[in-house]
Image (tube, rainbow, N blue to C red; front, side):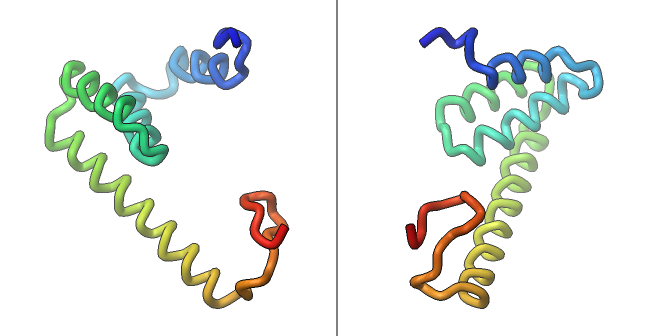
Length: 101
């Protein structure tokens, strides 16, 4: 498989070329995304690149903390909605999972 043929690579390259976000914003957003996806290698690389670009360790740590807090909120919301609105034998009809299929 040639990575150049992937649409996601093209979208990523276009986003990186955008002048609407500063390099600082791109570094921090990229870090938040890699943390959310759970990739230790990408996250470590993003942290190193952010610090090398002059972003302080405190700002990197704040990004990690904020990302963790947002993800914790998503987990709690999902659990509460699951408890309140769904039966254990229900099915997922929005395509996010295969429960009940």
